[in-house]
Length: 350
Ligand code: F1P
Image 1 (cartoon, rainbow, N blue to C red):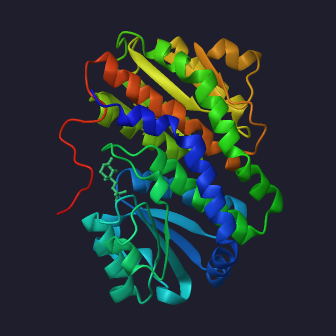
Image 2: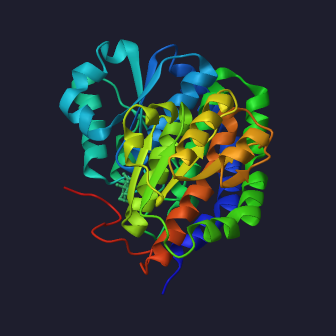
Image 3: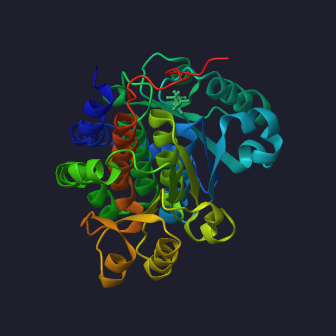
């Protein structure tokens, strides 16, 4: 059995280093690009995993720059461009995201932005010479992050990292750029220190329901964790903004629920209380955080401490290998091949 998925997950340290090199080599062009955005709302567009990437990128861009940003799925641009870009080219810029650069909805979204709204979007993908790169006013490409696997792992984190750098360049945050530059070393530690724990947590496929919770830029990551375990292991999974979980969805908690909480720093008290409440309902709790404390250790059955010492906005991408490995080991536990997920193809072309 091939093992592309695990190899690609474990290759993230070196691929993130190549993203850093690419940023350094193109810093002047990227700075000119984001300065050209002015104060316009930046709309991030993608499909599937790339839409969840857009959600996290939009939260980071708005948080770091103080400028408006949002994420929309490619299909909504096709259906409701006038509602997404009400101010036309005077009020908006767009970044269209696609690993393959050939997803039909993403290409049509680029054309709708050009033909209906009146400007060419920025694009980011992992395949040079794709349709998407030809449709971009400026096209970023990260070939090293491409995958052989159907599911996206390092392509997700590498394109997100590139977009986080873009936000930091736009904001002129020197300290944030330095924090981002240190992430490749930190993600190597995450993989080294926690891969075995994830395998142990999954165990003999003891869970039949997976819930991923995150706030702000972590919500897009929660959605991606939900999709990874769904795609690779054909498991029931959900994602919510953390405290939203109390407003109905928690009714599905059972002893076979694994609840994965992507903990922020700023809401950790409220998030810890939610974890405790869901543990009392019988869920098994995995908390991923920067630094645990007594409350977290009491409320969680498993804790992954990243120990990055970074802000909510620059620490976020470090959570992803844990979520990717949860899907990988759940697939193996259920006897599936993560490299060949059921019903899926690497690119969705209509
Ligand atoms: C993204 C995507 C993934 C999905 C599968 C097929 O396409 O739809 O969301 O998990 O890998 O591709 P892309 O537009 O990023 O290439």
